[in-house]
Amino acid sequence: DAGVTQSPTHLIKTRGQHVTLRCSPISGHKSVSWYQQVLGQGPQFIFQYYEKEERGRGNFPDRFSARQFPNYSSELNVNALLLGDSALYLCASSWGTPNEKLFFGSGTQLSVL
Amino acid sequence: GEDVEQSLFLSVREGDSSVINCTYTDSSSTYLYWYKQEPGAGLQLLTYIFSNMDMKQDQRLTVLLNKKDKHLSLRIADTQTGDSAIYFCAESGNNQGGKLIFGQGTELSVKP
Image 1: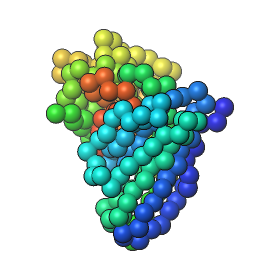
Image 2: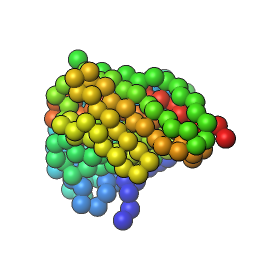
Image 3: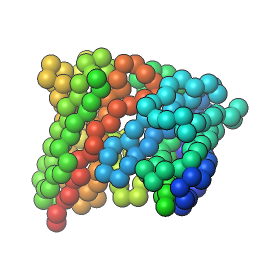
């Protein structure tokens, strides 16, 4: 079975631009969570989606948004990029039950110049 | 509030045991996790422990949980150079599926 897949693997943008990151969960998983990992830090929770509905949101500005599609894949969108948005963006897949294990993809490395 | 703390660096010799420590603040956390991250890669789930357990062993890995002190440790027996990576402790917080609170990570360096 394929694991969690994310695309693209690397991305370079300039300040003020918009970016869309994509994630496909493990087959059968209905929940996708997004995390931001700044260099030298642990991952920070951005969003969780379950059955196409937002279930949780971390402490991130409204420039960050996401959605989940009927096939359970997900997109993370970031508008008006800032230099501080440069980070590794990780997607995690799970069944959607409380206190469960999360399985992470390899991430998208976003550089904002 | 929710917070997880880890020491930043650990250096050991190949063949020695490594012990990585973590403290957390949310006593309602039901599960506590250890993830491994190699350079340029995502997070790999190594092991986890339910909050009503004191210890869990999985091959070379031993997890110890002191719930009273909110202290978690990961012991790696017979550490190999391939174990060199960053290790993250994470707590599940208040039963919020999909949201984990991670520490800063401990960089483990294994010297031959």
